[in-house]
Length: 506
Image (cartoon, rainbow, N blue to C red; front, side):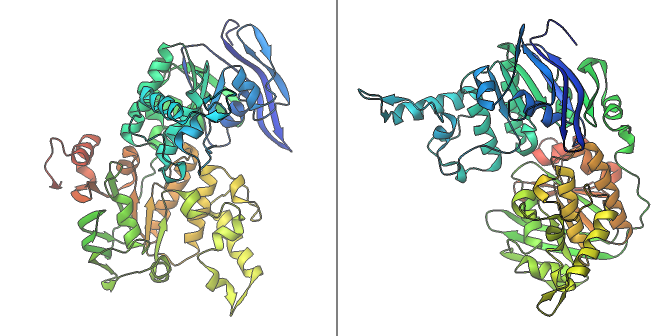
């Protein structure tokens, strides 16, 4: 602990009932520093930052800014002290415009009594701030509900920076950003650092940790394992600090004999999304699919699943023609989809674990029109135990679970069905390394049981580490089918970006 640091959090403790969230945690950071917090889900990172931002009150401990001890009783008080936070859960008002959200509570006024909002000035102020941050392409008059998730994240960041904070907390900001948007965010972080802003950054993505961090604090089970300088540690050592596993152990080896073709796609097209897609998937195979944001990967998976039916082309399952018009039809024949956005498309956040795991299997649990509650609870409890889902209480609400456990709920839902083909769209997004390893072991168990898996991911190491073959998409077209032995980061990037590599098989 640096006694002269600008920010000092000392002896922070927090319990929720009998669960210890933070135990005697101390952290110090300097103005003009990018200080990254890493650790598995549940390690205490977000809780610690929620305490600093005034959203959560600690049971014990102290916070100092400069040489002054402060008590954060509310986010409003933290804001007044120059601390702003961008949380994973957005705080935007969907029906209001970008400008109204950014300038909420600070909209400029005009007139004798300053009772009329000066809209031209408001639009111009918001436009200027977006341009200053590097996101000039957003129209300040657009209503937030019309924005993509990544654009909403940009607005959240702009809102946090509207009053030039001295401390900026970013909790997993990159989880929904495209590669270009992430580059802009990193450029912004470097500029803020040069202006002596303290950036506290929470991330699961180790590649970005090593790109932007000055120092890294590792938390595990609510305690600080250590704080290290970025240039004094490598990824393998950092992973060991976080989860006690080496980098080589993240992607488990698989002993699977690839079987017969289970799914084939011929000249599949959807107007405005993708065209001429052809590939085959075999039993016991993990077929990776890589591409930059907007390449059409998700649209292909949704078409196979019947969520957005193709406009032309054909699909065959077990050699028989298949044209699912709805997800229900796809599920009935053995096709399952883990969606890219689990909260929007994969889960009923207000429901319990039991409700969510059961969603695709009610016919199996029913007698006529009546649900057999006892059978439902028995089947769900079995999957919850099999996947080591925490907590194991099937009555727990999904919204209270960590990202990794929410993802396990979705996987449990499909494991209760008879699945021949499992489509995984960003299956480990927003999930910590420990949960990732568990999901990878589960994927291996599925393919060893004869399931064919299509793994769509923007994480190149994940695609390389888990796939038997890798398809590469660019601008709605399939531009590469690369064997595992010839796949590399360079080859995939060249194909995805259309630079320096021939298209086709490798």
